[in-house]
Image: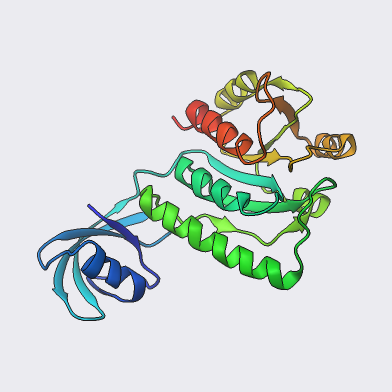
Length: 242
């Protein structure tokens, strides 16, 4: 059953417009009487029946409301060292599918990309759209938030999560041991810190440690900056989303 996010509150009936209506009518070629799922982006799904389709609108009747079953029990935020080119798009798309709920592009010492305010605003807008599309495709209950790029220290100082893990290319603690410890403590939220293409400066690692972060390794092989967050997120959800 197709799933879509709705901007306005969902009541007994709803009217879908814009890209959503066009997708239902033209791409999926759905008809009156067929069912769709609408999500309010706050963790609730609404089972709806299409009543009428016009040129620009789709009218639906909501039959039931239920908590989104696809959201993880662990809240994960990703602090990604700002990479070159379009790599961040893939990171947001894949990690949204896995369950990450917030993305923080971070300017680190070895970040090559240095966007200005205007460029950064356009990029965040595009990334937010990617997060929305990936959330709908993977049947998420929320749309992950994409924050504007921020410098390393400022971003980490605002980190709201219970626990923080920095993945260091030069080694660290066993991720499995860390996550089993978190499971035993019933940790509710985790921040993951990934470096840019050139990795971390030692001072950045020590700064994260000073704020309580644990330094972990993703194994014997060095992963690309766009691969590491996918591997790290998958491991976290495997161990803690139970």
